[in-house]
Length: 378
Figure (cartoon, rainbow, N blue to C red):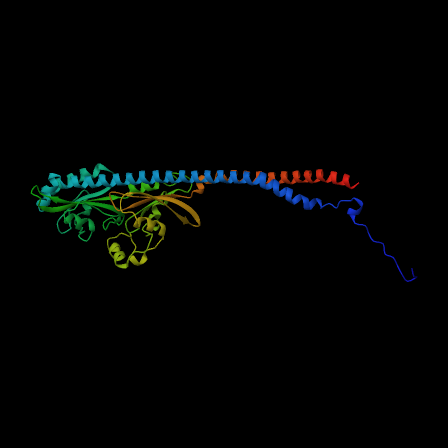
């Protein structure tokens, strides 16, 4: 060996001397932790999620069932009220003193008898504002309230329909006499021979119908509300007028969809929008309800959903029988499902605890398997 040569030592491999190289504890822990989470945690999460979702669905179904019950029962009550007032005006049209006066409008004695008969009929309910006999030209000739006499209402739908021989129920509109919203019921006055001699009409305030609608405010849960719309989608009553009757005009008369210009002008002329003109109409769109109404060919109840201020609402609309009106009761389903928030928090807490336990168990397994390896190394 020459002086310039240097021999470098070569390190022996670990396996050459019986030493086993081990993977780090951290690397071995991941598969173990993953297996524990998959085998223990995943089924628990799945079962709890399925149970919570099933409970949420059942609570939502319960909310819809309550909405349906309320919508149909209140709609039936409104129907019953309208039909009762319609029967009333038909009875008035058949009173002998009313028929006799309609045949002889110039007889003051018969007029007094007719007034007495009309006043008696008006005591049936406090909602009656006036019951009157009209001539065939639309002039009020005798009334339970004499200040109504002399007014001519030949342009009103209720007169024109009764003049044509039809018992009629109007949509809510402003009275040209009181300048307040009312319903009008009318019927033809005929002799025993069937000859048309006049018309009778009653003016009824909206208090009973508004009472029914307002009664559903919060009726089936927190946030429940209701409203009544006609076949043009015009809101006739809303539950929010409860305690706010003085602000009613700003809350109702808002269509759920645009109305054709000619139709809007005709309705405005009939005082269907209160004090507002057709140009002043405020559209408060609810396309989901419009779609449902357009598809309802007969009476019944249909559920639908919509958003109100970014909050989901479930609703049921019922079509009335006495008028082509639609009654809606709605509420956010969260009013029923909020109770599950605590349960969801408990599930999350349980998941967190399970993860912690899985980590601790993984550490124990890694440590316990590491001790034999060290012994082997010695």
